[in-house]
Length: 113
Length: 114
Image (cartoon, rainbow over all chains, first blue to last red; front, side):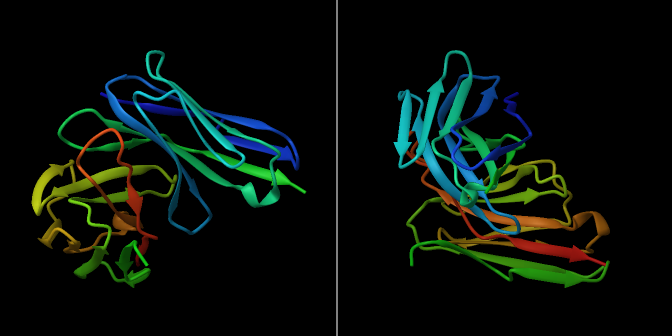
């Protein structure tokens, strides 16, 4: 059974710092991995999708990596800003006919001005 | 706008009532989902429909009944609402094709049962 874990559960950093959020999953049979952002009381915004055959994806100040064999992904945020404060969710899409997306419990990020 | 839209955004109702949440996507996706986010913010899949056919029914009470009239719509009907049903319900959609397709989520319906 696929399990997704995110560490740390919460993170508070001063503005301008570079930071790394971690995600691990137990079964490497995945189609892809997606990072989402959720602001309080809002829906999920997709940040990056990494296909199982890819090693990393970049969008602006965000860089996500994937090591499928070790069951790990990281989300790197460069030069953090207060507007980056949100919960970041990692999710893997199972490599079966269910098309399921299994989520981690998230990392709550606070960037202090 | 291309999106997944769900209504209503907020729903407050009494125990024992029956309510429905509607979802529509105009992204041309062939698969739609309902997810539940509990008070601890954990997201868990409830149902999935592919081309109007139910393919996932996680261990959800049978008071919850999804209906997909066509590929672009997936509604969720809940009978005899209980306090424990209070949560945020998210609709999502995707292509079933595989590695290059991600999910798109709606903005959620916050259900409060009093």
